[in-house]
Length: 141
Image (cartoon, rainbow, N blue to C red):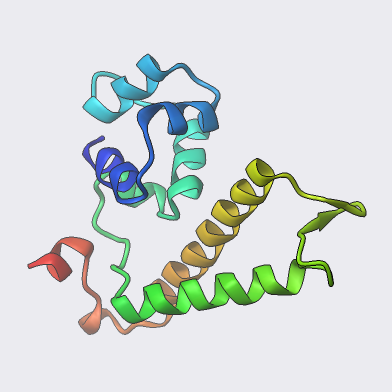
């Protein structure tokens, strides 16, 4: 799946990072990226959520609207606002009264970003009139 590499490198992640998230070995993930094998549906859904895109987008189906620079700024702003709301007065993110460690905090941040991104994409799909819809490929050109 050609888009996996683009998504991974755009987030400055290694193949090992994504493989660990999926719970597979690096070789298996490399096969997904090169198209030597295809992930099952559950893994495909995990990849889509991880990268904040739809499964259609990963499968090269041209239904996912592209996000603009303004959309990206909105996502970043909403992410920071949400994370700030979750912090206690000492500036630490807390779970069950305990501060989160750095790894967990980063995973929470990535998960929140992906969910905000997916919400933005779904809203664009739902509320943008068909005649104004563009695919990511159309936005690049």
